[in-house]
Length: 409
Image (cartoon, rainbow, N blue to C red; front, side):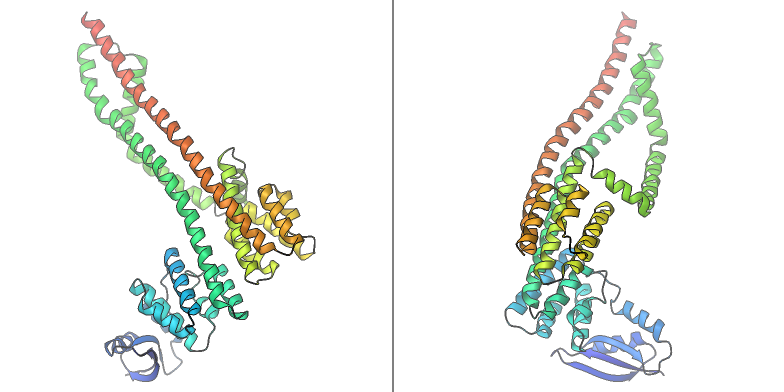
């Protein structure tokens, strides 16, 4: 029977190491759990099979699991509170493990705590889970550890994550009502075309009435929707997948991103969102002591829009040469004038982080107001368009009924 080395955490929080004979590493994990301990690592005493075994153990211990954004924000806030209250990192992580919202999060946090107990820094431990913790997150934690200010850094990081989530939630919630209107109205139109209108077709045929052209067109449309509607939905899904794949090509994506920022109403709102995300991330990174060039490299990955990423890259090259950040950003025409002005003021007064955060607050508020105006515009337009479509169907039916009355007269 093969022998396995293992590392586990006792209920008292102590690290326990030892060896065990078992048929498989999973049996070692189960035996450790039955003893009331938390398994961290189990590997064969010989070097054979290490690569495949490591992958298997990572899966069995939850190494491939991912935390949701809300979970990361909550855990960051709790960790900042614990460290700010004077707790050491190990006890703070143990508290997070014990109070984790679910078993998946507890397993992942326990692996992070085990890495820290083995001598790794928190940033290094977090970097083992890139699906849960972004480069921005790890970079801020590393800067906080290097500067001896991990607790305030985590507090600012939690604020950043909460602001990002709030902005995304504002966008999502603002579009819920228009989406419901579109779905409900589309369903009503489809119901009229496929269920209501066909009920009158036999009546028209029996009386030999000459149907008006609009009624004929609607009857044919109803037949097409009823016969091929499902195929149409499938075609739309396939087209959506093809478009999604096409947007993964950088040459296509950058042109689409450029075009989207030039739309009359949505483009302006998109620029406000970009400016808010850029300013908030840059201000948080610079305010936590990251060098400007390193901060811009991280910001470029966060903003998402490839056209804006190219503008930030040009600004990065300008900053490297000592020419400043605000001028190339202003020349790009992507970021609002207010953003460029506040960043220039921050560069001149050596308060770039504070001015960037101030710009973020302004653009986040502008985004909320822009979303409110967009919804206020969309809702009446959707109601008018869908109402006109339903009224057109009903009017065409009435015309056919009038033709029947004329025939009877």
